[in-house]
Image (cartoon, rainbow, N blue to C red):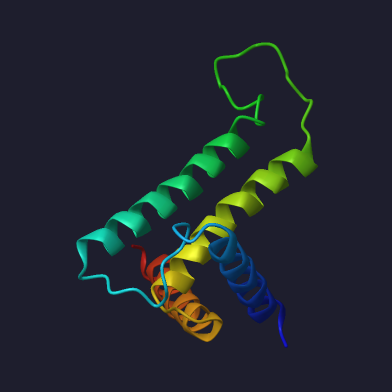
Length: 123
């Protein structure tokens, strides 16, 4: 079993456990994206992932080009934890819409080829 597969399995296990405790936390999946309530759920889940990324970005203090004072303190563990939180929401979205680890890997490879072609061809 590869690591991406393990991530998908761990996330599904968590989603089922949470749904057992709080029945309204996740619908049965895969969901029907033509359904309004399902689209709202996916939108909300995606925005939670974006919010977690913003929490991660709050740990970056040394990015302002106009700042003369250096802010070198950085807590890598806290930053990484917030990024993982974001990925958990994004993985939940993928699982809810019926995307497997193989589907994600294939889509990733396809897009990777496109962006490399663009770079080579002067996109």
